[in-house]
Image 1 (cartoon, rainbow, N blue to C red):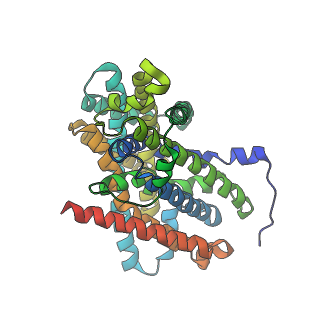
Image 2: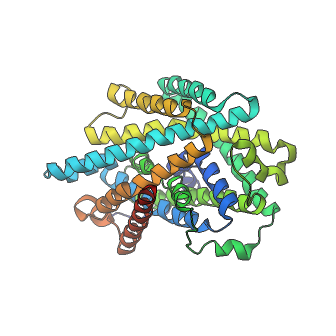
Image 3: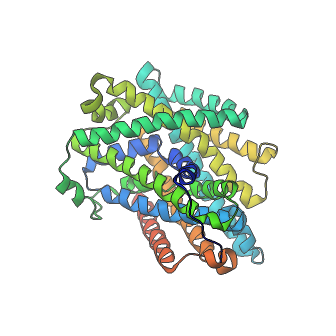
Length: 407
């Protein structure tokens, strides 16, 4: 057994970094768009999707981070090692996980670029698909630069997103939603025609590649199992904050915009007018730009970490395969965004794709962290395993239902 240690409040605050990296990744244009549209179309009815997402993201990201610390290996590396003597099963899993994450990353990249472009377009009037392509090229140059510059940019953008989150929380209080109706939204109901919206709300929070990112980030941050209490604290608090922000967006939208169409950033700015008045539109635009940039930097990195672990690459720029995977994800995202699809529909579709591939990754995470041969005494508890299996089954049901509904 590892020796337990009491950590100071300052040490706990420092432990929030990897968790906030994940929150910075999923609080992007997809979150703002999905939550706003869900509130405008279905009122508070789909609030349960956010509650489920928060529980799911705390459980799954916690498992992934714990796996990274205990094994000092990434999620994909553990998957490859566990099935080393079963090449057929291993290859099937490599194909499933690799394709699922790559397709999800491509869709998410298109949504990230489009979300940023929505903000710029609201300020300049330049067509969204044009800005998306230009911004995608800028991101290529950004990730080709020194890592320290990217870290500084992420801090700045994180501050922008934090300010936007505070404004949404204040706005939610100002618009005075009917709490009795709000709490009724915690009861799981899927109104007719809302299945893809449900999947989008879940897919924008529980992002498959974020589990791979979190395992790698935790592995770099913590080196001993004695630090697992910090891992747990550093996961739960940021995920709860991210969930509260997402819920605030939906509740504000349901209170202010119920029945209104959501076509672009200008439409979504309506929900901020009670707080910001005439500044609502430019603020929403800047917020979308900040959120889009933050997510756009993380998305190609997430896909690259997954493929690096599956195929034994180094997770650094010196390995050209890792580097060019980043570029490939960006170029594909640029192509998707530049074609000129309806921007809101594209962002919603990206979240739905993530929701569809989610069961594959959740299943892998729960399986690996439940094995004594991998985790030892730090394997999942009975409650954690039950929660993980329930999350897998619910996400599988929603994903299969959405695919069936397409036909």
